[in-house]
Length: 85
Image 1 (spheres, rainbow, N blue to C red):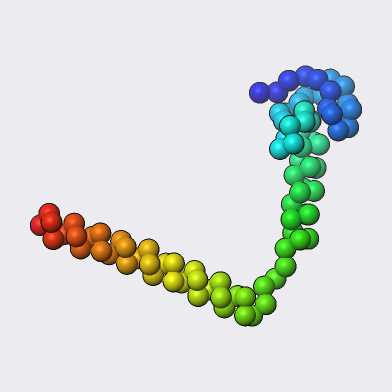
Image 2: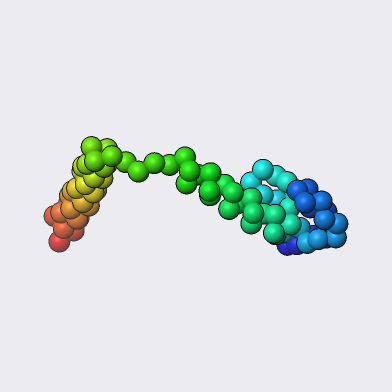
């Protein structure tokens, strides 16, 4: 739902305000897109590539989680088959 008003960032009058951004400011669509791109760039700059040891740990923990979830599903299926043949 667009409203005609003034953008709080660029100050343009009578521009279509597309809604509030994550900070609660009334911004035009152009300024909202610029703000989100800026946030994405900041996030990418702060992230880093994991080293080999950290990557191995992540893979091990993720694999263990998948095995546990699979076992839980298998046990539930077996119980269902035993109780309701």
